[in-house]
Length: 437
Picture (cartoon, rainbow, N blue to C red):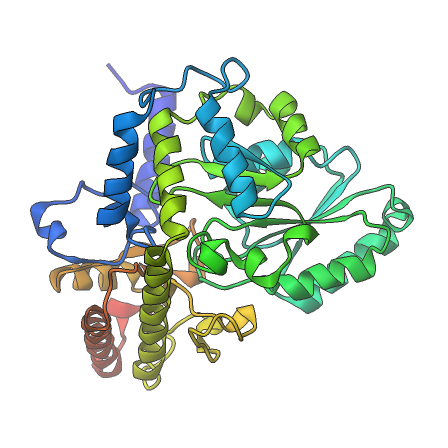
């Protein structure tokens, strides 16, 4: 039987992307050899997935918990006491008026941006915001979606002023403007200048119709007092309409919490389809998140946070130094990582903080990843469409259990690969083999 029209179109699309090296696909499950490799792929920033303390706390809690399986359905049908208790704790921990626990950060962003901006409102956003925010915005009733160049304060101010000038309701205070950013961006590890952005929003919209919304997914557990994020580190809790903290990265669980006020919580519970028609997180998840917060509040959390930032600082500094004399068209770091950095998070502007996300830019991302794998190091390539076509990279995610010795092993392998590519590039008559470089 011949292939259906649908199957033919799907197969053609898959094969085309595969030939271009742009096909995103599930990796093979880890092998026994992978278990011994040096892994720089996981977003388990604090290494809590392997934490003896978190394991002990969780097992103790499971033994006495009245329920550990399932949740019973949507929160609109059944609202377990454990879920509301965790929300109360998270609201207090993050210094927020209210909290809403959801099944995933993706669901939270889709629900919020689909429903909170009202008809005629305007959303100004960083061009690098997460796909889930884009999906939510596309479903929203907002009148305009206005992007600005990544982390560019000049471009943000220009976009905001043009919005005020072109929309009378904004100047009058009857039209709301949402500024949407991530505190830490997942591909470049760049950090938003939240304080300056918040100040600008207030200056340009003095009638209070400017609303800051921050996705803190990659900052949770890593920055700020007890890992409360960049917003808390800057003391901007009262300046944010909403913050998103996810549980699937530094907290080694699943789900997320949307921090806002009681009115927005009530509105989303009754309007947010991504929340209304989704089964609530199971009791096991609620227990694990509660235990992870215990760790963040303990000396163990502070120690893991310090270890992570120390290794991240070392790795970035050494990569920057060792890559300095290699042509940037072969390999380089993102612009942000060439700025001075320090692990003294209490005294520095946030844009100079070390980052646990370090991308190595190269058009030979697949080749570099394969080379590292042969050296017992796991680091995955990220290519178009996940990033722009000219920004292919190998993305490193540093965890608290990584050491300076492990960082040196990675750096040496990266430099060896780059030297080999440089030698081929310089000696080849046409350099066809490495045309992409």
